[in-house]
Image 1 (cartoon, helix red, strand yellow):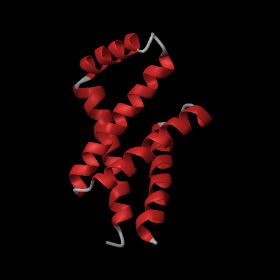
Image 2 (cartoon, rainbow, N blue to C red):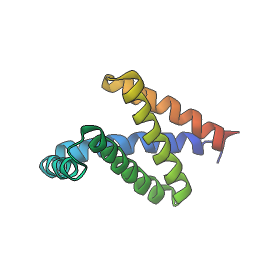
Image 3 (cartoon, rainbow, N blue to C red):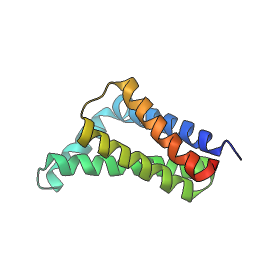
Image 4 (cartoon, one colour):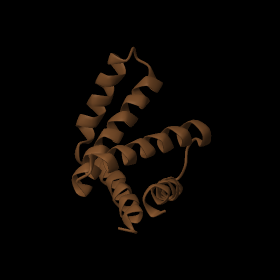
Length: 119
């Protein structure tokens, strides 16, 4: 169990890649239509639409990690951490390349899970 922090960080990274591939490659048309529906339901506000998108992505990660680790606690923590990192780096840093984005997530998520499960 000493490496659970590492497994959670790896699965969360895989879940993020899975989410990206699933939404932008497999369900692309549905995802664009859903984005439009959300946009119009939140008073045509781009930032509200973006927050709803991030919350839905966090829900995806919650489901994936809760199922894989059979632990809703791990799912909630992983989804919350991922959501916070996405919001913070978008607001504070702006655009990042794909590798930088993945590395930022993995480093911070690993650190959080080391604090929780590794000490």
